[in-house]
Image (cartoon, rainbow, N blue to C red; front, side, top):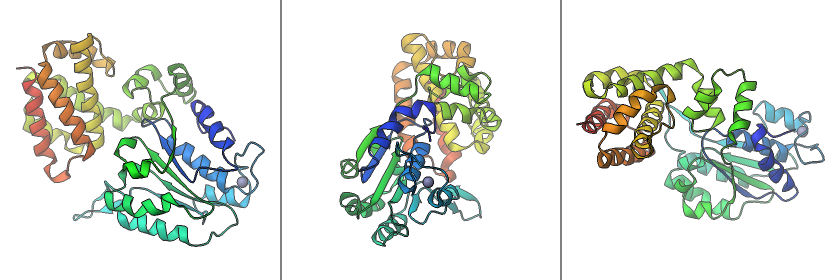
Length: 327
Ligand SMILES: [Zn+2]
């Protein structure tokens, strides 16, 4: 089996070389949208495979590989964000991996394995472990039971507890070279790979996601609002943005601010080339200290994405700050 994506080949080979003695706590760190999750799954399957290929990769056809493929391998656990049901019956993603999930994983690794080989616990996104959950895991990460491997995946490794980080062997996965990413996107029949790649800051899997029409429409709705800086009525606009995913809103607005900053400092647009003209006008007009303050606040807000109840109010407040950039 080759690497899940062509740009991961070198990292994949480095992992396979460790298969005889794998790190018991591995941290795959790097930006969003580069395939860390897929790499972690491929590595888990390689460890669980009962007839691995000479290079250490999984065979794809043994019983263990079949179970893994159906998500039913008894020696594999994925600890991730769970869907929750809100008060009004709506489903939403939890913002943290909860302590119960961590405790359950700790109990799980104390049991004997079902098969004779490894047991793999995958934590993704590991930076979503809340403090109690992280603390619950510390001990088993420090001294994992025999044949137990933890794989942590994180876009924001600095958010991990230092005590967790220091227990892990870290493998950094960077952005692929542009030509490799573009070639791969072309092979996925993606139109306008160059624009989408720029929008996603060079992360090919994010670019693919952008290609999803719904998300592109949401992006357009946010950007059209931001582009009309002078005439914005914050209340109306926040109302209009209600249906947009909060993560999408946050990312799109962040890149827009990033572009304003790039115009202000370097005279060029980095992400939203299709809005270059209006960005150049607005960027030139923007007040630099206020812009820097808004960028910082926006990044901070991303860590605790807005509570849905206050969302409109917070977006209105945000828009008022935004409008002041151009006073
Ligand atoms: Zn196999």
